[in-house]
Length: 475
Image (cartoon, rainbow, N blue to C red; front, top):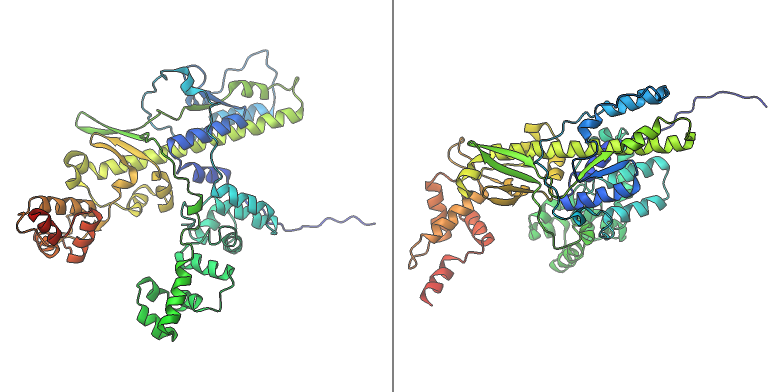
């Protein structure tokens, strides 16, 4: 029997644990983040929770402890530990000064709330049993982390391939398998793809409903029913039956796994005025400090009393703890950068109120901070900002643009709504302003708006029409 050496090409997937963990942590609220840290704390003995001034902070961990003369040299592990302690690449934000809890029981970690089964749990369970090769399985796990609360993936396959370090074909192949898990359509990039996959799973590819999605999508979105019937040669009865099938599909496949709970709002960002300027800081009211245990760092240096297996276990736990701390630092710094940009852009709102609210989009912030738009979207999800004018969800500050006569003047949709409400409140009870009259007044003020847009904004504010308001005055 002859022994030979061969080079066998294999595909190895780099899932980049820091990236996956950041995707998971960015959209968490403070309460959800505290719950997540509880689970990590219970699973990783190398983590410590600090509720007072004792114990090493993350900044202190950046400085290796002075070596004792009695400690034997540990070679590579000493060098590795020093490198570990120096690897705090992310600059910590400037948090609000921590307050000691009123009662010690506030920080008892064992009081955990059992969370319901999430979509991610449900998908992981199916992925683990899917009849696919290990590379595709790993990519499916990776893609599952990017699914938003509605069940869609916002990133393109090219972007995902760059993040995962695999080919676009591998991403496409894994996403096609993910689309057909339960709930069917989860992981789609567009509504059209989501509905199409659901029809394919039902075996309805040779139906009028499927033809509408494939051949008359634009007409379907714009509700041009006559154009659809003419283009596909359908009778009104056949068109009605096909639309009935489409309307029974699920446009938000992940919605069933969205848990609606009564949540208490804890501001993630606090804005306060100081010497005429607005200072933006992160709140530390709910999430405690998590650090790496110095005891475990010292244990790793002990070659005499620990077996190689025990040392490897401690090494892995410390690496996981370091990865968690770096991810937390990244999430905090990202949130702080976004919050500071919002405050700078919406300074007029803090000084004038709703009339000073300016248009702002996720894309604007992403370009200004050199971030991906989906990163900004995840970072502001479930986050609140406490300002001198009250506490607002961060998404409140992202406003649609309304065109004006002057290119230098920017007006948000909320500002237009506020102005419509003011005009209606100051109108004559005997001659209420119609939507057309409101549109003319707004155009006179330089806001280019149609009557239909005024009607839309009025209905969103639950304001009756001019005729209804006149009748209410006469009653």
